[in-house]
Image 1: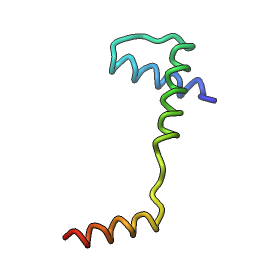
Image 2 (image 1 turned 60 degrees about the vertical axis):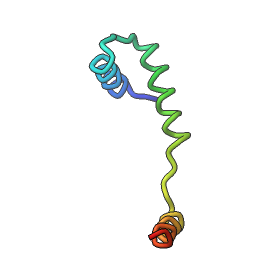
Image 3 (image 1 turned 30 degrees about the horizontal axis):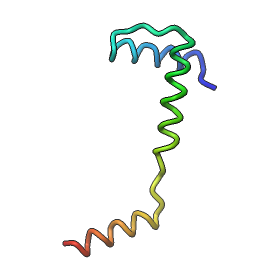
Length: 61
């Protein structure tokens, strides 16, 4: 759940970026969708992944 304080911050950022005021319901929907998107695409790199990337970089140089 998104806190009222976080929702208000999201609304302020949205207003600054897009020049449009959002009501609480629309802001909650958009903020929830944004958080879900980040959750789906953000995956921290493991140490093993990092080492594999470093190895590939060394092989191409």
